[in-house]
Length: 191
Ligand code: APR
Image (cartoon, rainbow, N blue to C red; front, side, top):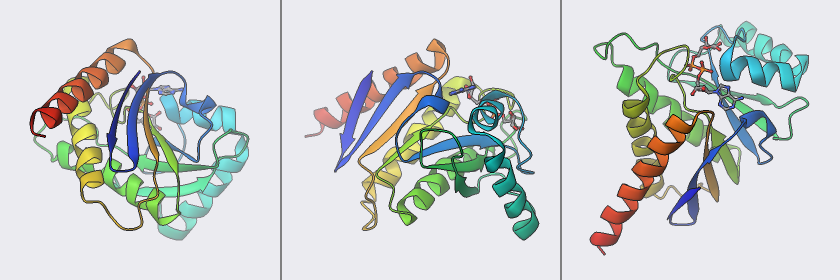
């Protein structure tokens, strides 16, 4: 596990199953219809129970779903977390369809929504790197840049103490640990 602290917020990487995570908010890699699916979306809905889908359907009725890059929040049903933020990553189409911008917006909008509800801790999966086929290395860079950039804005309503990336494969875990190692070294070199 690797941890980097920015201000009062620590950023860490773990290998594991996000449905067992016990903090305030877990982030789901959903689809724009909020219809559930496979991957982490399927795992969250099957472990969390039908209550989560009921709330997703309410959101669909109110606003028609969740456009890529945006984020919505529901309860967490039977899961140990308190809430779920559902965000929709870009489908990788070669990099020429603003996929990088959309993926960065997923992380930024999820964090802004978490701050809005006063969350102290949040866990992210590696959004878009499964069924949506975003290359894992570039996705790691986009994710950690988006998160560290937002933390460095030092927003007044940021009460987040813990941001954790829950990797489901050792490949992603290694990418995130390496990225944080390098980021830490670069920061220390400039002190
Ligand atoms: N905990 C943590 N991470 C997980 C878990 C889990 N239980 N299950 C899968 N993952 C990881 C995958 O290994 C991948 O690294 O989540 C990451 C995102 O992969 P997907 O779940 O396939 O999500 P994504 O690539 O964003 O595709 C989203 O898939 O399930 C559908 O409805 C979903 O249409 C949407 C699409």
